[in-house]
Image (cartoon, rainbow, N blue to C red; front, side, top):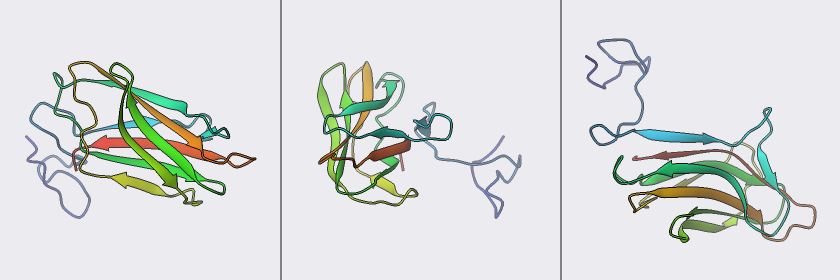
Length: 146
């Protein structure tokens, strides 16, 4: 059985399998949400939050994820991204100052608790703060423990 260590290849020492994030025993180490369709990222040109994707999860399945990494960027100006629990209408996380124009930008949030109930539907949403022809793009998000 793999002991979750790796060598230079990024593989398990004993099985030669890739090693990734680890979570609590019996819990997933990470969950990735892909918002791209046909290699094109999800975009929003409005000043209203629009949902890019949803994650269904609960504290009965695993401990709350504590880290969120998202590939998100704007064409110009400033954008916003938030994670909202649709069951409780609680905004779990929000960043209203996204300014990177790089398509390889990764926004990293640590020290959060991304859900807190026995049944959560997390909605990842984006908006462009000024619009006027500018776009906010989001391609993927990764929820994890570290």
